[in-house]
Length: 169
Image (spheres, helix red, strand yellow):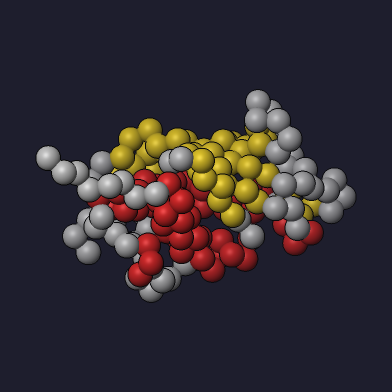
């Protein structure tokens, strides 16, 4: 029995990175905030690089609460979207080479999103990771944690519920 040869690792990595880049580039607000994603296997870490425009209180200085909330929500949505794209990419149903902002799969819609501000966000880079607690055909629940210098010292966390896009278009 002859099995097809597996794709080289670099080809698989390039395909996954292209899909992730298309996902991030497809949302103008993500580009405005400067959020990028680092991928290790199927685990994503969102990075919010520091920029003066993100400061809400220049006297402290501290990250604006709206920026913090947006960063957490974007991280949750990107994690959900990536999990949907991952399944389609690995099954061959999605070709990242054909992805453009116009052809991206629909993203989940926020039902509710609760943010816990644990301490002031300092004027430096921030990182966040989302964990999908439940994801079904119609609904998903996600928990997100954000930190700056030390992963054990969170500055914000959030829980969100999302309406998942239909899989048939």
